Amino acid sequence: MASARVKITTSVPGDAGYLDSFPAQYVGVSTRAAGDKVPLITYGAINVTLEDGAGQPAKLAGTAVLRFPVTAGNDPAVATIPLWYLDTTTGLWKSDSDAVRDDSTTPATYRAEVSHFSWWAIAVFPPSSITVRVRVVRDPTDSPLQGVVGAQVTVRRERGAWQGRMTTDADGNCEVIAPPPGPYNVRARKANYFDEGTVSSTPGTGVVDVLYWLRPLGTGTGGG
Image 1 (spheres, rainbow, N blue to C red):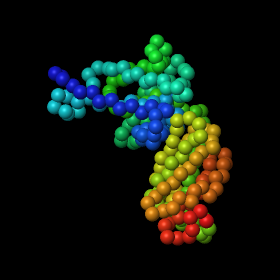
Image 2 (cartoon, rainbow, N blue to C red):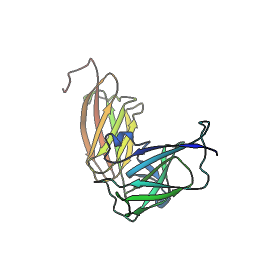
Image 3 (cartoon, rainbow, N blue to C red):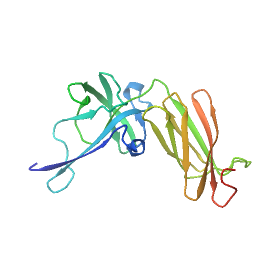
Image 4 (cartoon, rainbow, N blue to C red):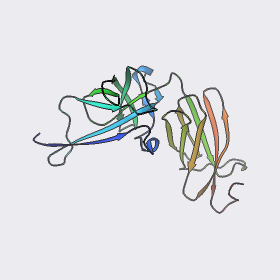
């Protein structure tokens, strides 16, 4: 290739809007977990694209080394950390190899050799997970409850770089696997609905059930 242009996009913990800008879900499929889905606690992601002189997508010939800088307050402090790439077909991260810490740079970095360009991330996953089940309803006093379809739901843990993003189904339900421990902060939104917030959060064995109220505009009184 006579000439090429490389585009690099980074997503770094500590940056404003990091949780919302992180590509895809914080969920991976790991060969170290028997191929099961696991929640990911991330320490940064890099997307690299390569174009030829005509501006057309090009493939990497051979391998390249990616460097993930360690940011203050988000240092995994381990010699190696699992490396993941984004499967754009499934929207899930897949485990690849390990990135190796390099303390000879300032800040310290994690180095990883890759054979293709795409979104890559360094992340760990806990030995267990919690399923956060959310039901978004129009009015928690209705009997039976009426779900809100198509609501956008986010679940955040009060510690660590992790977030779940979901859309409710026809019954107002959605769920995500989350790293323990909680507590978890849940928010839901949909156009033309008023956010009344969490009605109840009930922990169980390996699960947390959350009932959330989105009231259609023009009904009831805000906050009541």
